[in-house]
Image 1 (cartoon, rainbow, N blue to C red):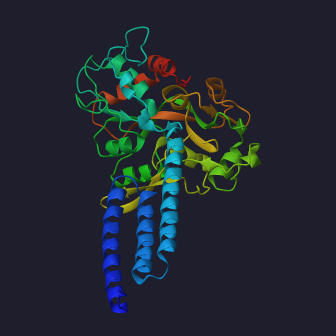
Image 2 (image 1 turned 120 degrees about the horizontal axis):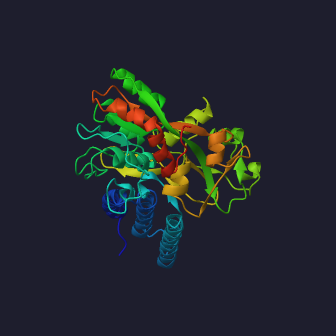
Length: 390
């Protein structure tokens, strides 16, 4: 029995309402469970496709056989897209990731059994037994100031997450600067502050004092299979300004350059900004994520070792703390990023790193800073794997 147009319209409205409601619930669920990039849009496509199919079926606009063929093709395309996405995801997850928190810093914990923190050949001339300066800093510098603690502080438990005495933390460069400016740390170990970090200190009436304690190379790296083994300073600037976009232009294969960046305020991102010397940085590769409070947000993607990828870090971190055989450090202007290039000054991206203070009242801070620049402090810089000041 053929239904009237009004009845078909009512059934269509009910069907569409049910699909919209169930599609909305499914969208929220997959978004909150990490499926924002692919599965959330897929839910929308499936809901829209089923809505169209429902209307066609209710109004019997096509023959039953044709409708079944359309539904089968639509289902097949959705399954094919899902399989393709999952295979691509497996490939991406198999690539090397370079990010700070991948490193197990616990292996450098001061006084811990089998700690990898460097040890002096003799007892340090400086000893701090009370009112211990509160320390924090960059991930890449934790092995160094852990060695300082092991040489100067009393033997004890120093968890880098503050679960014990809370004196020696490692909260990464951006957070360390925030804590220093807030008066929660006495000394932090980091690269020079960004302009934003300097302004933040000024707004709170603090003056950041930078005491150089060592030198380090800022390095760029690519997949080991990339034909390019070196770049010039101008090429680096052009790449990160979005002007040089293909490896073919730098002597490599015809592949688009995927130039990763770091979060704003990190030591390495600040160093990149200095290298750019006022040139505007292009937008970095980003990951879309779901935040319960603010909805869909984008954050800077971690470096993944794609064949066309370009990343950067500091030499000790990239070669020792997070070193692997899948990436290749690039020469810059024909000079290798090694200690010889750092000492001679021929490697162009060389920078000092600092013990940074902001007016602490702790009486041990200045003697500690002086000791870091002494022969003993510089000995630990060398033994850790950095380049000393002298």
